[in-house]
Length: 118
Image (cartoon, helix red, strand yellow):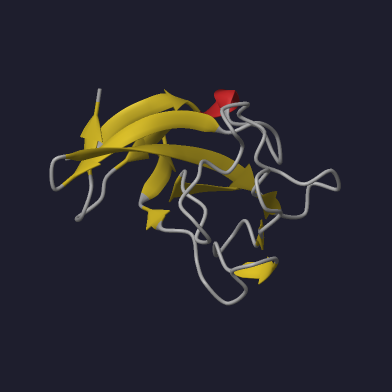
């Protein structure tokens, strides 16, 4: 079942992410959705290096040049559209992608592995 996250205009191109939480196997995980090249992308908010929150709670996931997602703890740098780490301590690893989509002016989450958590 799809869960409403927010109005589309709340997730602006290469700007702060929209936070939400998901549940898997009894554990609650922080997650976020961003917009990159017009598409919404959702990920667990956990660096592939050691699992720390990427942005440290600030909501700012993008690098200064707005081309990549960056972990503020160790500098791991990820491609926003795939979650692939292209620089830093976890090169070649991926962020965990979540199924987010846009429909009718709103952004939704629907995933087979993770459940939405209020």
